[in-house]
Amino acid sequence: MEKNIQSDVLVIGGGLAGIVTAVECLRAGKRVTLVDRDAPERLGGLALWAFGGMALVDTPVQRRMKLKDSPEIALRDWLRFGELGPDDVLPRQWASYYVEHSREQVYDWLVASGLSFMPAVNWVERGMQGNGNTLPRYHVVWGTSQRLTKRMIELMHQANVGSRLTLLHQHEVVALESTGGVVSGAHAVNHANGQTVQLAADVVVLAMGGINGSLQETRANWIKSRPMPATMLNGAHPYASGKLHHLVAGLGGRITHAGEMWNYAAGVPHPKPHFDGHGLSLIPCKSALWLDHTGRRIGPEPLVVGFDTHTLCQRVAAQEKPYVWHLLNWRIAIKEMALSGAEHNLRIRDHQMLMFLKETLLGNHRLVRQMVSESRHFLVDDTLSGLAAKMNALAGTDDVRAEVLQQTADAFDANFVLGDKLHNDEQIRRIEHARHWGPDKMRTCKPAPLQLRGARPFMAIQTQLITRKSLGGLQTDLQSRVLDANGQPMAGLYCVGEAAGFGGGGASGKRSLEGTFLPGCILTARAAARSITQQKL
Image 1: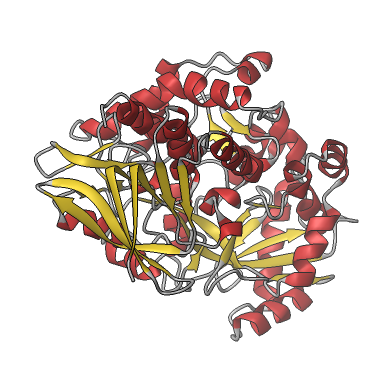
Image 2: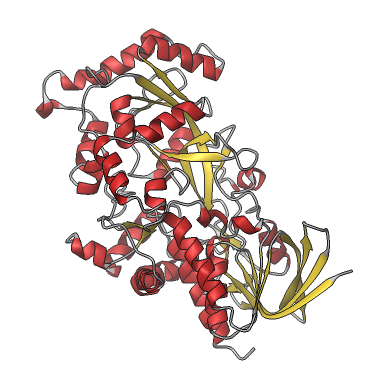
């Protein structure tokens, strides 16, 4: 027997954008149904597992660090780095909205909600030629995105005055209902018992995430002129499959910039996977050498993280084999190695400031030992010849010759023979540039030979491209209303977060300044809620 549920607002997707939409609509007195595909303990979607970095403009944290940021500077960086063209009208509008309102609508709102940020701002995505972030604006939520998400869930339940919230877990929306050209609800299936549910509402808000949880959809939308690796790991949410995007397109909605994606270049299989193909995104060590499948350094321009993730991914994808090697030593690993997400950043996640400072200053031996123990893709040996043998054993080839690996290390180490003033290597120059900024200096080794006495054992990490976020999506206006092919709002239908390309169907263009995604979820959700609650439903 079919179950029927009526509400003012139907929110499809229980990630950050969907939850924030529900919070704001409940606070305005609306009856809200939030339907989520996942289990109750995974409410929050990808945000529940994310690190919690946010690109924010002109905040108190920046000012304390004597950084003079402004919406004008941030917008210039955004448009230049993302390569947004004059035809990207709605993405440009959302980019402007973001930089103008991220302080008030995100930073101030979160602080008022009981959250806080770490006291340092990080400098990421500087651009290969200095064309990225002009200055540091990457803020980290204290407690990671997991604390952020759990706090939003708390606020949602607090706003549920008079039991106006219906929360449905393990329900998959399989169809949208449209009456007289107005979207009026959806059909869902309860995967716990197989029951079908009719969800009727005055307004429907799509918050189902992007497309990168489906490797098939990722490959189908891959831009043909860009190299695509033979294999990829899944670092997105497995239910972010693009199905609802296509349902909306069938009703007249427009998907734009579907081929623009924010993937990462250094993924490893999750040692304890939550789903098939699940990967972890390694934040690569700046001091590690990136090698091809033969153990030769990738060049002529070396690969260094923190400057241009978009280009880094294309360089990795263009390699002959679908994987690359990171060559480093224990000294580098304990200082620089990190993994993205809440799961492996427990000191920040669990508010352990003293332990965080201790591991930052003395080295994170705990994390390095954990990954060496749990993942077969982290290889350790006291000699380069022994490491080469282990690299071949893992890859199932004899591609890495010990003498080639030795030559690679020797060639890099030769930079240090004549002293600090005569380094002539682009990777060393980039590292030294990064170390001028205090927070980066704390997490980046002073350049030194790979074979430095006392720095062993050597380590090799096999990584490959990992999917993450969609930069494109359903086209929306500044009220988060879904637009049709003629640019007109589709009555009764809104879209927020990643499903909307974080606003306008592709606000970031080809590249993100990094950290724009969580704030993008909040900004688009709050815009939708304002528009909805100002209507007479």
